[in-house]
Amino acid sequence: MAEGVAHVRGRLETTFRALRVRNYRLFFLGQVVSVTGTWMQVIAQGWLVYEEITHHSALALGVITALQQVPVLFFGAWGGVVADRFDKRKMLVVTQVVAALTSFALAALVFTHTATTTWVGLIVVITGFATVIDLPTRQAFINEMVEPGDVINAVGLNSALFNATRIVGPGLAALLIHSAGTAWCFLLNGISFVAVIIGLLAMRTAELTPTPLVARAKGQVREGLRYIRGEPELRANLVLMFVAGLLAVNFPVVLPVIAKETFHGDAGTYGLLTGAMGVGALFGGLHAAGRRSIDERLMALAAFGFGGGMCIAALAPSLRAILPILVLTGALNITFFATSNTLLQLQAAPEMRGRVLAVRVLAVLGTTPIGAPIIGWVCAEWGGRWGLAVGGVTVVLGATWLLLDMRGRRHPHVEAEGSDAALVSDPATA
Image 1 (cartoon, helix red, strand yellow):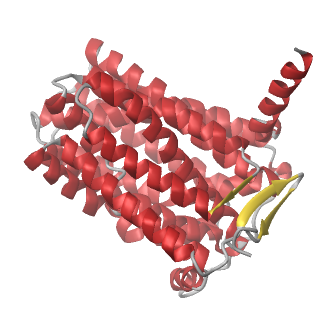
Image 2 (image 1 turned 90 degrees about the vertical axis):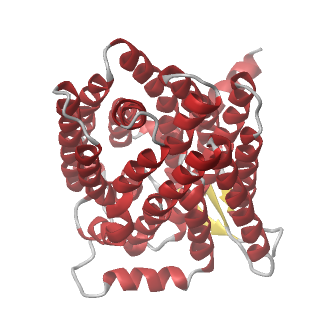
């Protein structure tokens, strides 16, 4: 009995070890509040456009989803340059203020019954410009808060957080939409950014280990792209991210259609589908946080399972049948994306990290302006099941390509021991 308790305690300490760092703990707790609000807004925004403004236009929903990522598509690589040039903590405060203001603007439009696709589209484009800087800066900032040996754990905990709130956020959104309307979701999300700002301002800057800032110079975006092209592991990772980002991670477009048209549900059904993926992703994120090593093979196999899960979900005959499939799909999804993120964080040179992570943001989100309207059109023409299937098949093909690409070259895995993180040759390919 005592040995069992000790084992569980040891496992918990391993899984949550990055939270021992005060600065990371402040960051993490702020994110708990803010990301819950963000998920509420994702659900409310999709429902506002699909149900309340356009009265069931999947194509319009795809276009609005795409518009938020247009800035990432055209300016995403420059976001990495900003992350490498400027103080990351201060830049995050700025992006949180902008995000809060856009949420308040959406709330005001809905409260005053003046929301249109044009106004929503304009606001999400502004949000997209904040995202251009926020995401690579946020991801690179992890390395400044924790020791190298805790980066795997911190990235995994962030993934678990993101997906734990995917369970809570949609549920709260469904309740609020049903009882008070979508405007309250936008209002509460705006307020939630205050938690992140407080956490960032309360950090002990002396305990951060800032990456040396890169001086301003011409051609820094091209320099980053040349660096990625010359590193086979980074290049392969990002190619697979482009494949998945283009057609597979358009759930805000697909799931409302699945909820409304396939299973004849409402906002609660949409929240339930999103929450099911969140349950699986929560466990996937905690598992990723507890891992001591990762490699390309894990990423490829997780991607294969993620795509396969989407294909199986597309065939589910009922709401009851699709929910456990989405739980498994969510777990494999987060294993895939968390592994990709961590490998890039630790394999990239410190002075290039912001630019490498910005290209990842471009791959995952910047492809949305292309992929979301395509998937929206597929859903409008043939239904939500086909939207899931197209994305699933695309990821399976991408994962197969990566497994073939790995043959004939050494692929390192990242192993965290003690306070150091090292890249070690995979014995299976030595």
